[in-house]
Length: 288
Image (tube, rainbow, N blue to C red; front, side, top):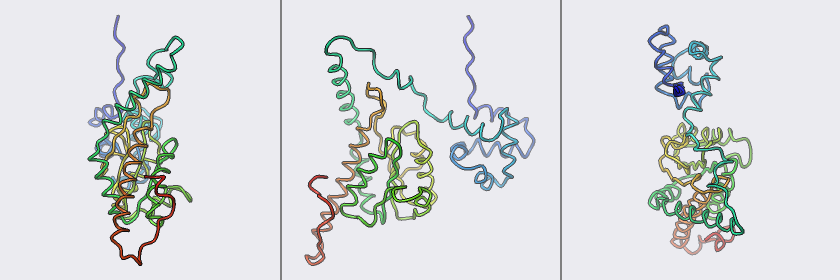
């Protein structure tokens, strides 16, 4: 019996087709091949400006490769960059447990997996990120979908000592207004795990453009928001045998990084002249 033929990746298809393309399309194709991450995250107009080409040439390139248009090629490139899941979320549980203690067994397995994942978090990386937060002029926190709770935890902790310089991206208005406000000297924290939200990738890209320090809290080195990050804090989202991905590691990183920043705030407060001391907003003992 013959084995099923594996489909080539869209990037390989593009590289194979380059020699047969007209010169102008070949130049555009070479640009896409060399900047495939940008091709999945930036608009066709932005790409054309960076490549010094007509936006329509990206559509012609996609059609020359057999796609209906640029959106089809970009979707294929995006899917090719996405890490393959070993199974659908519905199949993530490790077998069906039987017997009267099956639920207890599942909880025990989950707790064991979570503890093992927490032990693999890099304490040095978290400490380095906490120092970067302490040195930043302003702090922006981007977390979307299920990661919003992690972002809100960080926001609560950091605002205890810096209520005027810490903000959630999209917390008080449209996200794009916040992305346009990033500046050099700021720190931008982006939180996410596969499948990554478009908003988290756009937040990371905006941090790059502004020159702000990017701190990525994510599940793998290949995550799109981790590319070029100044500080990469990894947690294990898919190691637990439960149905849903785990945020335990992300919450632990947020709690520890936030606590380190709060301690730095206390040190600054204690070093200030007594007349300049004022109590922080909120109940610090709950956070710490």
